[in-house]
Image (cartoon, rainbow, N blue to C red):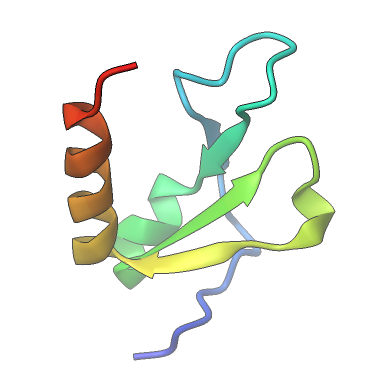
Length: 71
Protein backbone atom coordinates (compact mmCIF):
# COMPACT_ATOMS: atom_id res chain seq x y z
CA UNK A 1 0.00 0.00 0.00
CA UNK A 2 1.23 3.46 -0.89
CA UNK A 3 1.79 5.90 1.96
CA UNK A 4 0.79 8.83 -0.27
CA UNK A 5 -2.85 8.75 -1.32
CA UNK A 6 -4.11 10.56 -4.41
CA UNK A 7 -5.65 13.81 -3.13
CA UNK A 8 -6.97 14.97 -6.51
CA UNK A 9 -10.62 14.40 -5.57
CA UNK A 10 -10.24 15.00 -1.84
CA UNK A 11 -13.29 16.53 -0.15
CA UNK A 12 -11.90 18.30 2.89
CA UNK A 13 -14.04 18.51 6.02
CA UNK A 14 -13.21 20.85 8.90
CA UNK A 15 -13.21 19.53 12.44
CA UNK A 16 -16.28 20.43 14.46
CA UNK A 17 -13.82 21.81 17.03
CA UNK A 18 -12.37 24.31 14.55
CA UNK A 19 -13.95 27.48 15.85
CA UNK A 20 -14.63 30.64 13.91
CA UNK A 21 -11.44 32.66 13.92
CA UNK A 22 -9.70 30.28 16.31
CA UNK A 23 -6.26 28.82 15.89
CA UNK A 24 -7.36 25.19 15.86
CA UNK A 25 -8.25 24.52 12.23
CA UNK A 26 -7.96 20.90 11.22
CA UNK A 27 -9.35 19.27 8.08
CA UNK A 28 -9.52 15.63 7.04
CA UNK A 29 -10.58 14.01 3.77
CA UNK A 30 -12.88 11.12 4.73
CA UNK A 31 -13.56 10.19 1.11
CA UNK A 32 -9.84 9.50 0.61
CA UNK A 33 -9.70 7.51 3.85
CA UNK A 34 -12.63 5.36 2.73
CA UNK A 35 -10.95 4.38 -0.52
CA UNK A 36 -7.29 4.21 0.51
CA UNK A 37 -7.30 3.33 4.21
CA UNK A 38 -5.12 6.41 4.77
CA UNK A 39 -6.37 9.58 6.48
CA UNK A 40 -4.93 12.82 5.10
CA UNK A 41 -4.97 15.71 7.58
CA UNK A 42 -4.12 19.36 6.92
CA UNK A 43 -4.20 22.80 8.51
CA UNK A 44 -7.16 24.60 6.93
CA UNK A 45 -5.43 27.96 7.44
CA UNK A 46 -2.45 26.83 5.33
CA UNK A 47 -3.52 23.97 3.05
CA UNK A 48 -0.62 24.68 0.68
CA UNK A 49 1.76 23.51 3.42
CA UNK A 50 0.84 19.91 2.71
CA UNK A 51 -0.71 17.07 4.65
CA UNK A 52 0.08 14.48 7.25
CA UNK A 53 -1.19 11.01 6.42
CA UNK A 54 -2.12 8.35 8.96
CA UNK A 55 -3.20 4.74 8.56
CA UNK A 56 -6.89 4.51 9.40
CA UNK A 57 -6.30 2.32 12.47
CA UNK A 58 -3.83 4.81 13.96
CA UNK A 59 -6.17 7.72 13.24
CA UNK A 60 -8.99 5.86 15.01
CA UNK A 61 -6.76 5.40 18.07
CA UNK A 62 -5.85 9.09 18.05
CA UNK A 63 -9.50 10.18 17.82
CA UNK A 64 -10.48 7.82 20.65
CA UNK A 65 -7.66 9.23 22.80
CA UNK A 66 -8.61 12.84 22.01
CA UNK A 67 -12.25 12.19 22.95
CA UNK A 68 -11.18 10.97 26.38
CA UNK A 69 -9.24 14.16 27.16
CA UNK A 70 -10.78 16.94 29.20
CA UNK A 71 -10.28 20.58 28.41
